[in-house]
Length: 219
Length: 273
Image 1 (cartoon, rainbow over the protein chains, first blue to last red):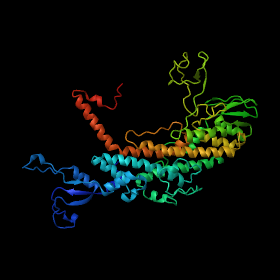
Image 2: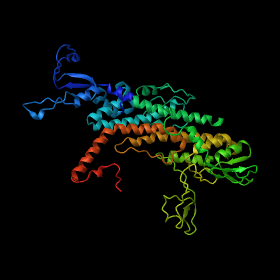
Image 3: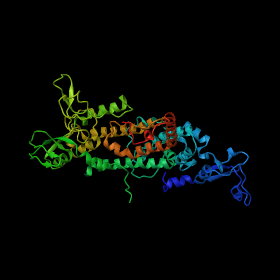
Image 4: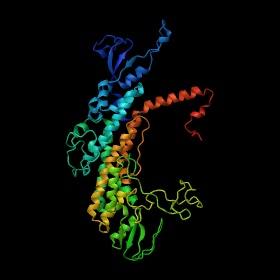
C-alpha cells in the first residue's frame, strides 16, 4: 500500500498487543506507572507502525555470556483481538453473519498487514473464503438497493442468507443510500472499508445500467 | 485532476459502439450508396433487403424511409429457449456466443468452413489454398450477429444494446408484441446478473483466482467490471504475503539445486523461449 494512501495510514494506526522484551526506563506511564521503569514482559497496546519498527529492529546489545543471543528485538507482538480465534471460528462457521466493522473498520487491510509480518496460512484461507462469499452477498444487496428488478428469484434466493430481508419489493428507487430497509441493513452496516468500496462499485454499475435502460427512449 | 469514472467503458459508450453492428433493413425508398470511412453502404432499392450499420438503420427508420428486420435470436421463441438454457440446462456457465458464420465446404461434402477464417485457425482444416487474411473479422461489432440471417438461440456480444434500440425505435417491426419481447429480455437480464454474482464463488478455493466470462454481453461487462476487478484485486491482496513466501521458497529450491547456474534464469524478462 502506498505511503500516502489514507486507508493504509488508518490501518497502521490500529493497535496490537505487544510484550516488551527489555526494561525501558521512564516509559512506565504506558503501563499506568508514571515515573517508573517499564519492566520487561509488560503488555502494552501499540499502533502497528510503531510495533512493526520495534519488533523488526534489534537492540544491538551484545550479551557477553551468550554471544548467540546477542540481538534481541525490543518487543514481540500478537494478533489483534479483531483477528482472534473466536472471530476466525465465527467466520469459518458463517462468514455472512459476522459484522466485520465491529471488529475493525479496516478488517481486511489489518489482516493483510499482519499476514505480511508473520505467517498465518489458516487466516489467509479463511479470509479469502470470507471475502468472496460476502462479496456475492454485497452484489446482491447492491442490486436490490439500486432499484434493480426482482422479477426472477431463482438462484440468488437460495444463497444461504434467506432471512436477510429479501421481502423488499423492487422499487423505482434511485437513491444511493447504504442499506435501505430490511434486515439487509444489518449486513450492510457490518461491512469494512474494502467491502464498502466493492458495494459502491457494484451499486454504481447497477445504477448506471438502470439509467441507461430508462434513457434509451430519449435518444 | 482525477477522472471520477471507473476504468473501462460506461454504459452509454458501450451503446454507442454497439451502433456499429450491422442489421438487415428493408428500404421503402431508393437511396444511393454513401461513401463512409468504413466503406460504401449498399445501394438501397426497395423491396430488396440490405445490410446497414445500426446507427444508419435507426436514422432511416426515424425518417420512415426503411424498416428494420429484427435478428432471428430476438424472436420470443428464441429468447425463451435461451432463458431455458440459462436456467435449466447450464446454470453455471453463460450461454455460448453465436458460432462464427460458415458455409459448406464443397470439396469435402458434409463439412463446413468459416466464412472469415482468422489467422488463429489451423489452415489445413479449412480452406487449404487460402492465404492468411489480414482483414479477417475477429470480434464484434464487426461479426455479423444481428442481421436477419444470424442464428437463433445464441446471444451475440451486443445483445442488450441492439435489442433495446430496436425495441424502442422499431417496435412495430417486431414479429411479436414489443411488450412480450421486452419482458423476456428483462428476465434474461436478471437471470444473467444472478449468474454473474454466483460465478464469483469460483474464487473461494485455494489456488489461482480466475473467472470464466465466456458468453457475457457488453452491457453486463460494463456494469460489473468495477465490482469484479475490485473482488479479484481483494483476493490478490489477501493472498499476497503467502504468494511472496511461496515464490521465495521456489527461488531457494531452484537456486539450491542449480548452484552454478547463471542469474539470468530468474529474470522476469526471460520467457523461456
